[in-house]
Length: 267
Image 1: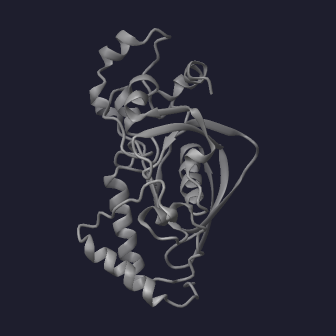
Image 2 (image 1 turned 135 degrees about the vertical axis):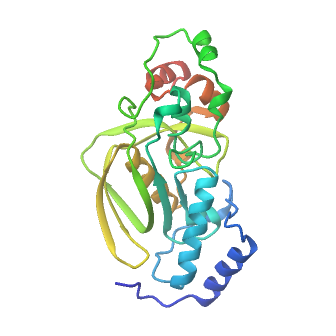
Image 3 (image 1 turned 90 degrees about the vertical axis):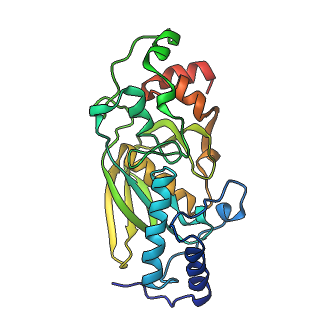
């Protein structure tokens, strides 16, 4: 079932113009402080033609993966419309050490499993050799971080265009981990999120979907959906946990160090 609303010819023209200005498909991501990131979202009812929406979706996905990130909402490219793209994958560990795995599975602006990011530009794990980390770390030695022992419960999250997404918690369990945002590059902070949610959205054809999400995919969905109501993750983050990507990569790169980070930083 298609969206029933009329095409907004002016908006459609503006989006087509934006896509033409960036023929490589890499769209500029707006930074925190831009009013559009705090605007109330407009329900998507078909304001764009199907052809324009398809081209925009392709460009948003490319922009997200190149950032690198695991999600990108329309307000982050200057459009106050209620849709976002999301995607994350469990990485192949065959050639990765523990810190490289963390770099490849962080959220929105750091480096995503999908192609490198999560919470925005992230540290380069290669800058932190294992021997350097072991030399400085005085705590208990940890086993290699893998998807099986990652407390964030990472999982495959195939590409989706999520239109008019909403979520509601399933149960009362929450989880707190570092995340960041492509609109606030260079920093990450600990944010408490629901561990399990019922996620509902529409696809590009107007078909409704509902799925129970758990762990890291649930966090990604919540992060991007919150963007559509003018919320940025830092609004409800533990501000004392705020760290540069460089310091996160050097000190708190392993999510199993969360208790130590909480005690040390006082959040």
